[in-house]
Length: 253
Image (tube, rainbow, N blue to C red; front, side, top):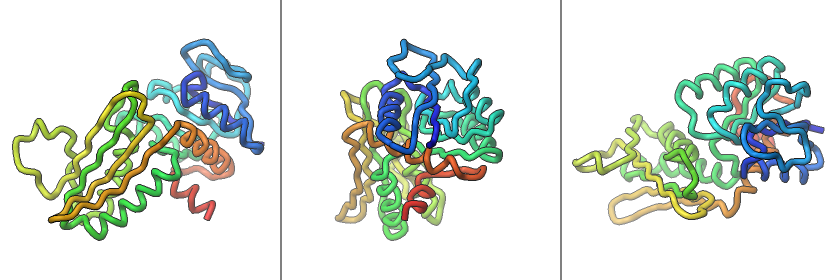
């Protein structure tokens, strides 16, 4: 039985993670950590990691970048693996996560959906074939409550595509600031925020007289929660290092 701690358990994603744990016979929630709101959970909830006595097998984090320091301090002190699904980290915080992975197992992904990771793999293959002669644009759409832009997933896609190209491209986020013709060595990344859109990502390869589009739509947040719980069960028995969805997929194949 994999015992899990959920950071951000009172949030929307935390709720879905707790439900996904309940539906997984091999896992159980040991406790939650959440600084805001009254708990609606059927397990102990702490406002921070201070005072937590239980030691989980894995931590799942769907919270806020502000929670990173406390979580990593606890994880490193107690040698607890972490599944980190929060987005919007600064470069310094990403460096913290990478440093922690030298001592504990860390599963770090901006998107826990199996489908979106398939989109990434397909986009990499398309970039190998088309990247030299096709312009590449990424469009991501999310609900009007999402704070960070572009999404962590859009940046994951851009980084994966970038790694396949011969020349490292420039990321362009706002064409209004560029009063010039589009250069070949760039990837445009565009954000849309509105309504209750769960998450949509589209990768456009635009060439001469033809366009290739690869897209993914998440219909509910549950797909991300299930992916996070699967990642936790996988990570519990791994040695120190940085892991991603590609490692989980390889383990299942």
